[in-house]
Image (cartoon, rainbow, N blue to C red; front, side, top):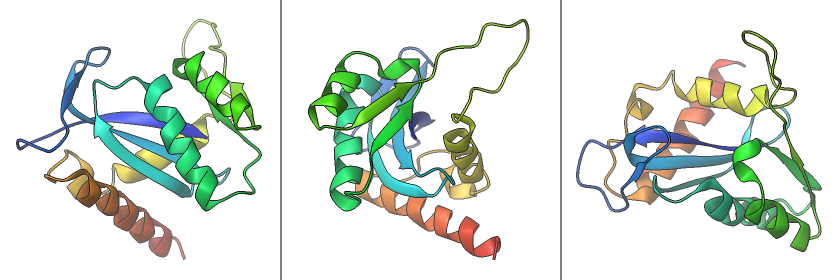
Length: 153
């Protein structure tokens, strides 16, 4: 599963941009998770870079670290460029379609990566992006996830 989350930055940081869709000035956290919600790859970048462009780099990083990945599942924000990139790598991609009932509905398989973002919400350090460098922020996401996993033992 692959998804991104926009986070506000507090200081003048290395990479910073404005996510026009969510109206957030800061950075995006891109994560690739397995089917249980464990983080395989994290990439932090400016919020003005679209998911279809930056998703390929994140997925390729996860693929180089875990070559047994057969494909990924993404939401509708990853159409076109990302799909072509993943197919060029010889992997499959499944784009979750929006379910259009009245009210709220859980998208199949997509809740796993959203739950991981929810786990990140327990960490006070990740409520906003307090780090100046993107590498520090990536490491804080990993440390927060390890803390969550250790608490569940």
